[in-house]
Structures are given as structure tokens and as C-alpha cells.
Length: 299
Image (cartoon, rainbow, N blue to C red):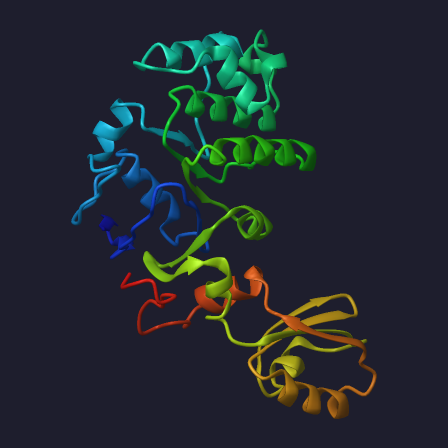
């Protein structure tokens, strides 16, 4: 798929196959093309070129048949209606919807049925949007930053509801900035950068695309520039006296670290997490020659 907005080439060659029953996360920095890709799958935006099929149908047809539900970053709720009325109105648009009670139960908001939308918190509004997306009993659910505005407890309850949905063998695609959510809930990860897929595959396999290790240590007074100058270091984060470095060769980095920073203590070396992979695959200049895959076929 390709999509332009004036001079901005928002999506420039995204090519994906997602199997029924997969839980897939779209990751990438702001402007990577995540929301535009989701909009095109939903039929809200048409690609300038390329083809999209959802269960063998056009996006618009799949949405009309109730096969697709969505929770987007922004979506207005009727101000003069209760939660039950809002979900019921959407249910009336579908041929075989869930009952309002069941949609509210799956979203974990049965107790909000009589509450008007103007009296909902940000996290509660997002869960009402989830109930609206669920009421058609879709086979595919698309979530764009689904836990925005939720506190820790509400976010945990939301993902509990999501587990119930995916346990039925349904397909979920979600875009998020919460890497821990992607690591915990996704079967497959798709990294986007500047409208291109730079990695696509199971999380464990994608981790291997970012070769290296993470070094953590307490180094009083260390300057980021001096640490970046150490051999093998590709990224540095400093939190007070605590330092976290991503290195392509941890042995070489350690040999240079100790003579250069004799005050270093509490040194730990660990494998890269999804956040380090995110930096490696989406940083400026990374993978400049094209996309990487995990061996599951051309992307």
C-alpha cells in the first residue's frame, strides 16, 4: 500500500499478511504510518495504490458485515446519551450483534450502563469505545493506542477483557507506544519507520534483528557523549547516576568501560528487550537499504 498527503509519503510500500487468530502489534515512532495503515484497513482512507483484503473482502464490505471493530485514538461519544444507549444504537446497525449487556460485560463496564458520556473519565470513555467496537461480535479488532488515558488498574482490566476476546480465536491488530504491552500481549510485531515495514515476525525472532546486549551500571558523573564514544555502544540512556547502554559487542565495551570509568559499579549485562529493538530498528539511519524480515517470506 502507498498513501500520500501532499508532499508527505505517509505509507510507502507496506506489504503484510496477517493470519486469522493472530495478535499483532504495530510499532514505530510518530509519523511511522501506523494510524494511516489502520485507517486504510478500516476503509476510512483509500490507498493511492495497492490492494487491501479483509477476510477476502474490501475493507468497506468487511465493516458493513460486522466483521471488523475498531477502537481509535479519538472518537466522540454522544453527549446526551447513556453508555447503554450509545452501545445499543450501534448494535442496531448490525445484523447479528451481541446484546448490549454482553458487550458491556466484555468491556468490563456493566456498572456504567446508565451513566451519561459527559460523566465518564478518559479511561472509561476508551472502554465504552471498546464496547462499541465489540458489539458487532467482530472477527477482527483494530486498536489504535487503545489504553490512552487509562490508569494502571484500568489498563490491566482492559487487557484482561482483551484476553477473553483473543481466547475465542479472533484476530487483533493494535498500535501502541507502550512497548511492555506489545511484549506481553502480541504474538507478532510489525515495526514501521517512515511508512515502511522494517521488521515483521514473532517477537522472539524480531529481537534477534537487533544484535547486541544491554549494559547497566552506576557511573557517577558520566557524560553521554563519552559513553557513546566507547567501542560497540550504539545508544546510551542516563538516569541520574544510573546508565543503560546498548552495545553491539558487550565484551569490547566492558574492556573499554572499566579503564575509562574506574568508578563504575553494579555492572549488569542482559539481552535486549523490545525497547532496544525498537530503537535499533526505527532510529534515523537504521536499515536504510530496506526492510528486514524473520524468514517468514518476503514483506
